[in-house]
Length: 305
Image (cartoon, rainbow, N blue to C red; front, side):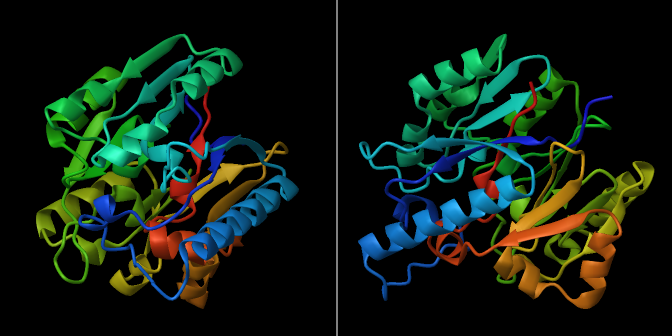
């Protein structure tokens, strides 16, 4: 049975982090706080990234840190899970990205280096669909229950249903699609900001799913796979409480990784529910969350090889 979590993760240390106007139109989590200069934003983001990595390493995770290049400018390189994923049996997948300037993050020399380091035997290139245009932004768009071979996706301009269906057929995953919206009724841009799956639990903002049939089908699926449902509110989702990832360290101790903002949004009961299943690890990445519109889960590409 495939493992749901890994102790090996890849992260990209930003060189030019900042607000990306190309992605802001579809990502309502982004905020362009003009009280900080471009250089201040970049410097704060790098400090947050380094502190986050050190916390992960201190708790026994194996973190492969890749330094972003200064040129070309890539404001969102800190979120690699949207363009690449690593799977068991030496499979690597690269994905079609909505924003043209984010496509620069797919650096051929990085892919070649990963292919050698992780003994990649098969590279599936989905980025050809960008010309269609159709998009499927990696494990931002897709939440994978690896042990049960199920893939979940909330549809949006960045998560095309036909591409997702093709992906599931190739991966031999059961497809579960639904629609989710924020408090203003705007489609959620990535599934991983409203939902996170662990070994035996799921954190999800059920209030973001307006269709009652879709909501009930999700609950039934979680019950069938013995996932304890831990619900979060729309307000907590807006504070990135859905953007979490369960990982383990080299001693097989599991952690649910999240931002400090997400942790602070949780109530005592939710924390107790999570801690009944796993440990909690959080780090302050407020600058990255504010300007990038993504959080802890978005910053991590899991390595299964």
